[in-house]
Figure 1 (cartoon, rainbow, N blue to C red):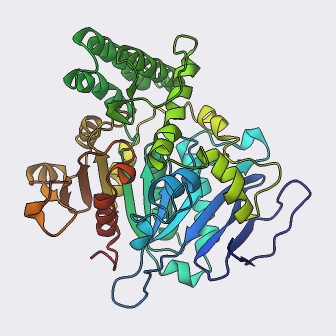
Figure 2: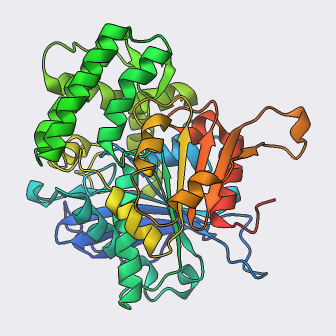
Figure 3: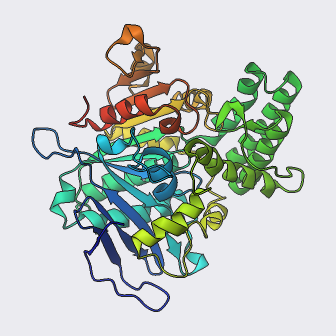
Length: 455
């Protein structure tokens, strides 16, 4: 167990924290973690890893990646960290493909109530993506303002699935806070992986895609399209909560008619435990949320059995600062429920605004993802009003490889870039791109961040 160094005085009540910022870390400074009280009785948990490859020499500054998980309600501190890109896997063994080789990593359990983050009053859960962005920006102000070391490292917001909606809203909030002189950091851009940016385009992709790969027949695909059309109308009429319920029903229908296709890799069957899809709309929603961690845990083969055991056991013991009445993931279901009215809102306008402001926007997608299928991603990208879109469409893609010996290696993906828009197609990957294709993902993050360790 690492030795702990108290960096700030931590004042605790018998049950709850009352301080605004509290942080601990390892004695060598390679890790820091803590809480930021972003609003009274609302606390975000963060965990920073410093790369052993970090160098402040040379013309290119060492980057920091802020990883945001999806869900909403899925924990970046757990899933993104121990299951995808952090230095240790779910067995607490070194990960060969950790993104820490190319950048410092900052994981945040976002929004409040996710993972180790918590609220002391249920009314404090965020109800919109914009409220989540405000909390995240408050956290960044507390961490960066007054910290010259952190300010030297450009920050790249990299998010997965629903986290991409958080990424674009917080990206705009960061840009505006910097311009207003309220936040002192270098903003490198946002990366949107398998992103739930336009729910309408994704639900319309499911029927045709699954028919093409023989998981739905023509009748079922037609019904999927009919249900998607109803979702489109609900979104157009501003009935977002009803659209969320309709989305859940559509997923339940597809799971039933495809004999349990995996929404995170359409070449597989779902690895989730059996759930009765006929009972309620909530059943389908719980199934989808459950497969999020089940899929990753099956990849990790954790000896601890599941990520919850890991987080509430060894990791909680290491961190030492988790309040006694807070269990990892305890409030995550409520996070989803309170955001249900925002869940189906598109965020294409925000992507357009980022592009118009000159912010670097990277989109990457796994070839065999279903829930955020590449077909849907390509559709919403074509809805951008960005003035560079026509030129972007007219350029050719560049094939991607993991090694320099391209002739001896299969193609791992494709890249198309024009000005500040970059699109990566990652072959053979599902929803969790770094899990399925760790090598090309590592090269991708090095390119996105312009890492000095890119080679």
